[in-house]
Length: 247
Image (cartoon, rainbow, N blue to C red; front, side):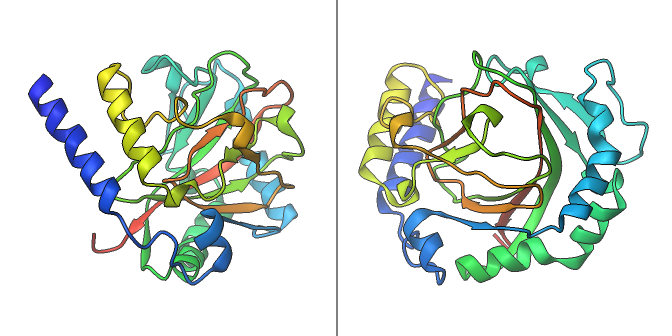
């Protein structure tokens, strides 16, 4: 097991060290910062409609959707961090507005335009974050290699750090040396090799704010985290997991 872990870690380090292209996206903002914010990507009235369909799942006693093709998962059942996060998989089955959004192809078309890479959605969820100032995971990536992408659409107002915004270190998707150092340090100290909070600081992170309907398109090689000072309001957002199609 230890040998396999070393091999996997070495592969991540090598691929991260030689990775190219993160700074050459056709979108200047995506190339420079690793993310793009699109206000009113979803009309406010549609965000409100989705909330009417999913807000009942903020009740922790509700453990099933009762809708085929969808399910409720609490992260506290499988991990020791982000203990106040609930995920609704198959979110398109819970709301006709989400279903129409999926059928329109707007999410993957937008990410394709921003990155110049043909994108497809592999998973679509609604994520519910209850206030949490104790268990939030620190800065991390979803994967060093291969690159992965996400689109987030806020369904509730995220107007300040107190609302637990998605937060990133701008431009960190292009870093290679710091990422390799982080991978090595994580291996040596038996941490997850996607952890970055020993190489990056929240002091360098930017909280990404927005009204309901605001979308954030991000290269998930960014050092990112849900803001740890989430004290006010339960945050709802759509999360689309995107990958290069044909990968």
